Image 1 (cartoon, rainbow over the protein chains, first blue to last red):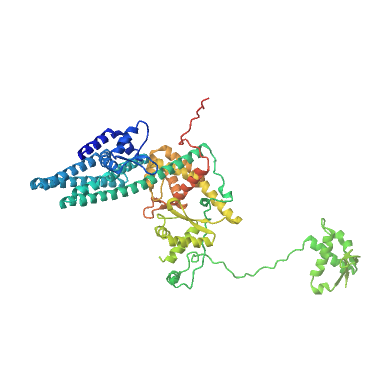
Image 2 (image 1 turned 180 degrees about the horizontal axis):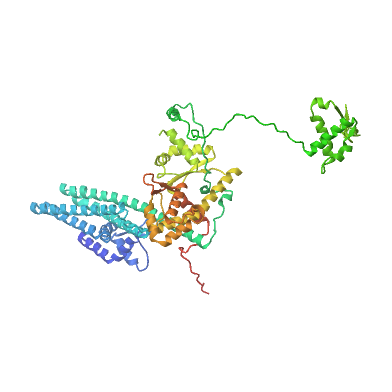
Length: 404
Length: 213
């Protein structure tokens, strides 16, 4: 079999088993299930060396050549799904670059020059489009979505922008840079366009969009936090309204008090000025300067002074009370009649309501309180006896007053 | 201001039960944003049985007890707790009323600026809101005998300034900036929501479905 026939057979084999091969590629594992239906197909694909049998587990897997072929074709298709503009623009770039290489190698310098100009214009348009898209997203994010104040709308806009950013980033991931490098590797002008200018812009877009994702996520977190806080406030107010007098449980009575409720009781710091602190000199100086030279207003008020002079005071004779008079009469009686007077005997002269003990103590008090020369006229005795047991106690039975 | 003075000022403020945020004290907040300095303050507080804490998202710093051993300290914590819980309902009602007045879905956030004139205008336009304000002033945290809406609003704003939730702009007197202490309140709300059964109309109610026999 000639090499041409082998090639045609291989391509026909690909076409014949296309569905099986693509299904295996899409599955991710690249494995072809060994079922009865697939038995003849697998045999044929093994013969064409389009699939390999794994040495370790014997599974049938697409080989790297078929996988690369599908990678190449499907990438562009998926890119178009994410962003039709980018996908088509890249296809256009590849087409123009190939035509340019062709015309240059065939010596058609006029055509190649025109093609290069057109290619340069397309690269510029693509770069400009990518950058303006990324910058517009960034401006939206930085401007906090303009004048929108409703939380719900802000959150929806945020989600929408996040999805858009992700879509653009995925489309950038799918750009087949290797293919562009291959096409442009042999030409200086192409290298400048496809290996320098375009990758630089793609990288710049990636950075802007990466930052935008960070900012969007942070913003989303904050918006969700605001929404939650508003909900908590509303829930608690509703709860208070529907359950008047409700209070949360007393967390301060728990053995392990939550930190949130262990806030310190305010201490009012008190301290004396540090008089040896050099830095306080200026403060002290200001205090001294500010000391008042005049009397404070209250002390300066015009009021009539209160005289402190002692006036001549009239002598006032205090009258004896009835009780005191009765007691004194006992002493007069003793002198007048020059005889012993018993306290109990004289009790009959005491004013009404006076207790006998009080009467006897009053006699003793009068005797003790009188002037020395007066007391010399009398003698007082207490008939009675010492206690039989507690001999420190003397039981007086009467108070006897007699002339000295 | 020297570092030593700053340290001293921050510690005194924390021990006095204050909250430090970038809106109430920018310099102190910047000081505490440096790891080593924050650690210094924390170490100092720990020596006296307290430590440095921050609210969710490090919006504000405050001091808390490290342990509640003695009866005196437990008593202190209990009185602080009662104060917090007793002010919870009026503060939440105020937040809801404010959001309605400003037609905002979000509640007041640290750094937000309140204009007394704007608020008064909104209250004047909506009778329901001025009734809510009057109800707020009938008891509790915002109790006042004032009858005019403008006076009641002044009482509420002054009380919030006094409690450290708002800062009055000294230049105009009618502009207020919300402080980081609101983030502490939101932390408390989140805690309560997690640990208590809060019923609300907002929550979707699951319908009871008969199981098939």
